[in-house]
Length: 338
Image 1 (cartoon, rainbow, N blue to C red):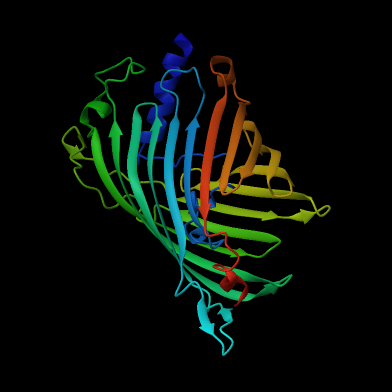
Image 2: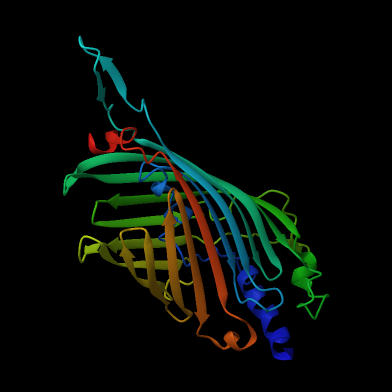
């Protein structure tokens, strides 16, 4: 533990300071369950109105370990669900309207990483364009833009810091406020999807309550930009079984030469139960499982850390629960009416 006390401050400070006072985005093992958290173009992608809660506890048992909490909401805006007309014999005919092309979403989050803490919200707008059909189901090309704002807090009284007189820490504002933008694009069919997203497009150039300076010289903080590439393909093995491999590739401005990948394989049974594994390069092996009960979706992920820190922790646990509304075939017939 003495070794960790000497190493953790260096790790934390490398994320905050250096030349750029860089910050990082949280990691999600279950990116497939709620792609909206990493790509704003996924808002309203499947036509459901969805409420999702994600809880991630990393390196359980280690003091000051990272943790992330996110609660999200997303939906597709419809012109009308359907139009009813009565015939001469008073038999109602249901005709779907044209598909709603606008998706909206948002989430609030709290991300803790050692002495760093970020608390804020994100609001997303997406636009969905029909692009033909695959297997009778419409393809969807989507673009999304999100506004996010958060408070960035540094706890200089954290016990992992041995030297409370560090000149950088003492001159750094404990609390700052950042507004920024994320952008995303995706293409979805009944068989596969691909998506690309960029985070922190302003790179933290707009900041409030920033008076940081070293030796009387004002420091200029900035935010790292993130780049995410996702994709997956569904292979029907039988009427009841589906095999889905997927990938999540992550990079940032500072570490672009050190790309991290999540390679995942999941098996579905009747789309109500699923299980699989992920391999995150240079980090962890992840076990995934979940089930659907009526309109509720429950999933769990366990990260088995491959680095030496596994000797000091009990792994990483991530829970997700989602509720989807609007599964009525009548209400969402417009999805098949492009």
